[in-house]
Amino acid sequence: MTAKATLTSRAANHSLLGSLRVPGDKSMSHRAVMFSSLAEGTSHVTGLLEGEDVMATLAAFRAMGVTAEGPDNGALTVHGVGMNGLQAPESDLDMGNSGTAMRLMAGILAAQRFASKLIGDESLTKRPMRRVTVPLTSMGARCATDDNGCPPIHIRGVEKLEPITYKLPMASAQIKSAVLLAGLYADGETSVTEPAPTRDHTERMLKAYGYQCQSEKVSDTVTTIRVKGGGKLTATDIDIPADISSAAFFMVAASIVPGSRLLLEHVCVNPTRTGIIDILKAMGADIKLINPRAVGGEPVADIQVSYVGLKGCEIDPELVPLAIDEFPVICIAAACAEGQTTVSGAEELRHKESDRISAMVEGMRAIGVDVEERRDGMLITGGKIAGGTVESYHDHRIAMSFAIAGAVSENGVLINGAETVATSFPNFVELANAAGLSIDD
Ligand SMILES: O=C(O)C1=C[C@@H](OP(=O)(O)O)[C@@H](O)[C@H](O)C1
Ligand SMILES: C=C(OP(=O)(O)O)C(=O)O
Picture 1 (cartoon, rainbow, N blue to C red):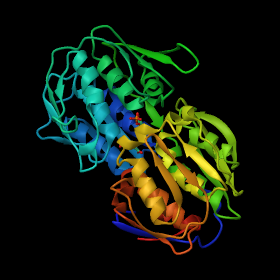
Picture 2 (cartoon, rainbow, N blue to C red; picture 1 turned 180 degrees about the horizontal axis):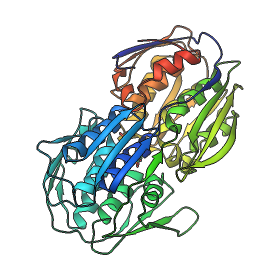
Picture 3 (tube, rainbow, N blue to C red; picture 1 turned 30 degrees about the vertical axis):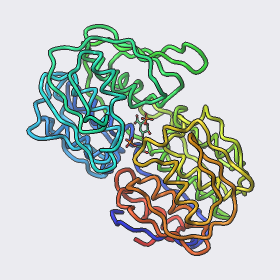
Picture 4 (tube, rainbow, N blue to C red; picture 1 turned 180 degrees about the vertical axis):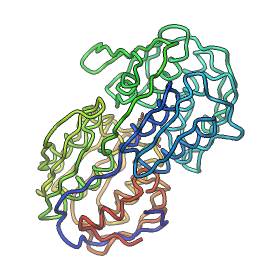
């Protein structure tokens, strides 16, 4: 388990060989806890990510009267209370480091008859929340952020919500999901139009719990999603595959450590999540999807990655929402590639657990990478990684990305503020070392 504040990553002990399975998908795990809690009946979840973010979501439902056994080795049994069965929590609901938990919970809680308050840690307390309170307020919800637009979110009870027709101002699955979840309680049909495809786990999982949810393509990129309020969720059994966002660290590691050939098992390859594969392939990576299959309404495959020298490329901005959480480690791939890589259209990265553009630029410079910061991305010139000390700014993905950089560094990379790795990938160090990396904690 990784909960240490400092990690040191040195040149890999050997090529990455063999196979490994990273923990369950974080987005699906949050939603499985939420939907199982609101369903009628008992749901059995397997493959649940036992990271701190998902545990914050589970704790919130327990605080509202939901009983659940586990998680134990990814298995969780949840006794759903039905759409209107939640009870007022006795204290503030702490969403920890998790934007997904806070924004999706805001959608559910804004529709309840009782008051609640959503709080978070130092990083979450700096993240923008008006993006959810504004559409929820237009549905009749009584919710507000602090004056700066950030958490806490204060929610007062309502009798019912009105449906809305909402155009997302940016491609965000969290805003889409918050509005759709509130829409489950609204008096009529709520529709959300997304300007570009974003992860569609909410839509898929609603259907798995028996709730109708229609998606209609308006153009090549634009989709409208509709739900009618007043329905119910029915308990189900759900198996959560491995998280491609966690697998991404090993996809990059195997692409940059010479001689590697690694099989990443049972990974969710939903097309709204596979931008990392397209981007690495555009850089020349050797990636194969093996044994594609369907698990719980989601496409799953084993991903085989073999080392080849990467080449820089201009990353297509359309791929940004499809690889949004993978950009920190994509930066490391670019730093090791021959030539230049440009990232553009990625301003949303500034609103994650840290400002991921400035955190990566600062960290890459500290370890000897030539990088130019831009408002909506960066220009990275590949070369050797010397090594040095970097700050992760309480951001799990920044910490793990620099741990991967350490594997090809001359003098090692020391990462400060790495305790947040436990939010999404508690056994990262253990799996990384077993695969051939050299990380001390
Ligand atoms: O819906 C989700 O589960 C998520 C959506 C993304 O955020 P945005 O939708 O805000 O871009 C992503 O960055 C986050 O890690 C998980
Ligand atoms: C952005 C992330 O998560 P969240 O928004 O849920 O904090 C992430 O896991 O990279």
